[in-house]
Amino acid sequence: MPGPERLLFHPPTGRGPLAGRCLVLWHGAGGDVDQVHLVAVADAVAAAGGHGVRARFGYRMAGRRAPERMPALMAHARETLAEVRAKLGEASLFLGGRSMGGRVASMLAADGEPTAGLVCLAYPLHPAKQESKLRDAHLYGLEVPMLFLQGTKDALARQAILQPVLDRLGPRATCVWYEGADHSQTRVAPERVAADVVGWLTSRS
Image (cartoon, rainbow, N blue to C red; front, top):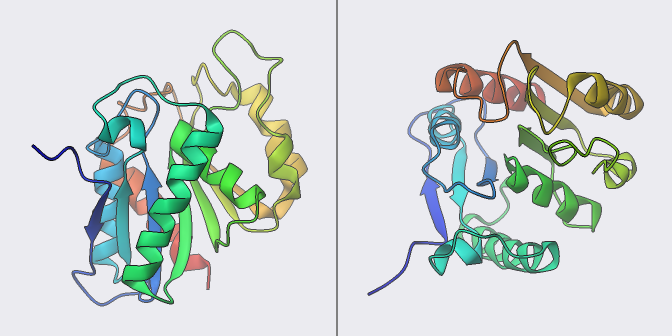
């Protein structure tokens, strides 16, 4: 019996400002591509004339819950992007994802993977209760625009710690803060997240 699909494509469902653009989104470490914000964002991108893509990592395709190490995640993600490019050709490609998925996307960009920009939902800046172990060093060398969508109560990216990172990144980084939201962002309406992402993508002209 076949396992879960690697990719779920959301082709354009209307004409709009995102024509010719594609956003590839990977899931978080303990989640999957059915996470409500990922679905809402991919649908909204398609409604605005672009291509939304939700992507699974290999461990999820194999039915495992525990993620692999970063090199394996990145290798699988590169295979995913090769498949996306083969299908969509010259579409302007944005990368991103939720939590670990966004981190992998940013690591790919830092490692030279071509992208027009990054979209990170609940970027995991540091492990829980390990605020000295920042995952920010690779971000400073990126020249592409970055969107962060963060809860002010996120235990994996305390606002007081993330804000100096954003300040150092300067105009390359845009952050939307969701007041009172934790890392899961369950209290944030999917439609709001989708509108924030599409608005930012539309501004990348």
